[in-house]
Length: 423
Ligand code: GLU
Figure (spheres, rainbow, N blue to C red):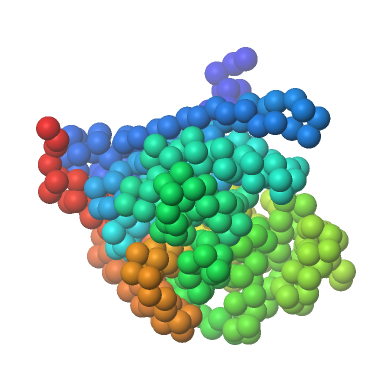
């Protein structure tokens, strides 16, 4: 292999990307090298391997992780991902992003994340329950209402959280709802939590549209990913009069310049397990979908979707990242130069963890709020955070991601420095 033919895998390694994003902000903040090296590392990384008995009686060894990046501002917080491509590097990046995300919206948490290498789409409910309960037991060293509070992420949902909450509670001997968020309402979940990531993203989009002088009604929207964040984003924007011209999931993408009704797509997906093949729409790949002409592009799937190859070809006015880490630093530079407005993940999808925080507070107080209160408080957090980041971007003449990082890193550095070094 010649040197030029070697693919630099660090370019796509989420942890490498997370550290490069952090470095950019740390440089601009002239962060002291000591605190810089602390924040560029994860405080705790737990990897577990455990047996899962399969239907035929054989045993499969499953690998899982739970990482806490920094807990200076409060307990660790972050989802648990079930996906075949989970790696420790990905979980570390996701944990670091959680630290910055909680700091951008100024909620009192540190950043954490979990992941299990598995394909939940190929597993029965029984296997998922057994695996979840054993994984919970394995990471009980780290989790707890005052220590580290998991939530749903890619491949997990409210039911997964119910199993984690029950397993933790069985071990403790008492019911501990505040150990996870994103639970079903029946066991201490919060109104509005399932829509929260999308709703928060839409509040940020509304602020961005005001800034850009755009109208949401009549705007063309493309959403990559039709899971929790993607499907609710499409539905909420469509209710506001936006035209959904492109949608996708792991099965493929669908496009229709005249617009599609996300409610109908959802009903279709419920039957077929994918949006692909939706009647009246043209079939596109996930890659092609991102290049469709639109006004608002919402990546709501996984990392590494927008890179130096496709960034020059995107035809949108604004990108709102509902996913974590969809855009590479090289693409960020290209998009910024092209004048495409970016709502970065640590701001754009922070509505999920914000309502997780509300859920945790309600659980700890045993006092529950109405949905209207939740949504109003979420709006307040998102509008303030968006405008704080925008003001910083304008002041320092940097892009929105860099500004969000500057705000977050400064808050986390201050907390870490104020606490000092133990012993
Ligand atoms: N998994 C979501 C995220 O990446 C939610 C995390 C949480 O609520 O703790 O932000």
